[in-house]
Length: 163
Image 1 (spheres, rainbow, N blue to C red):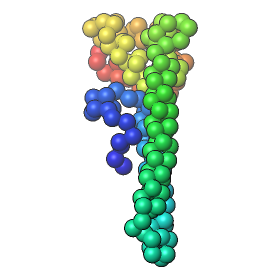
Image 2: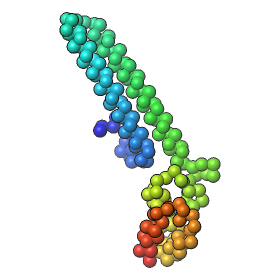
Image 3: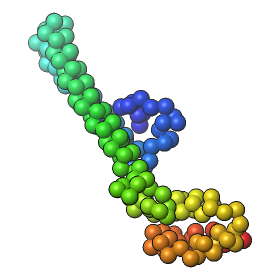
């Protein structure tokens, strides 16, 4: 699938999270469906007008222009909706009434379990360079057990492997 519903550079696409990428793909699918429907409508109109001997008339040109304008209008609505959704999704992930999301001060429960794992791992890797102190701190973190769920043991094993 070629993504051309919005113009973003490769670095901008790489900054989109999984939910935003899903939104972009869904919007692109809607756009493709609208454009395919418009092309089908134009083809049917041409065949109908060709059967009546008036396919090269200005009426056909005006009808095609109207179909194209309607399709472009529908695509513009989808594009604007997508841009709004992406902006809202960015805003939603930045934080809540407790401030910006930061583990462990304000954990983000909207993240997937694997994203939570990465956040907590990044936090503990940046806290100290001493692997033993890092493991002791993580072992004493009661929030991490509930926040990470099944990934708690995986992260514990990872941090223990650095000791």
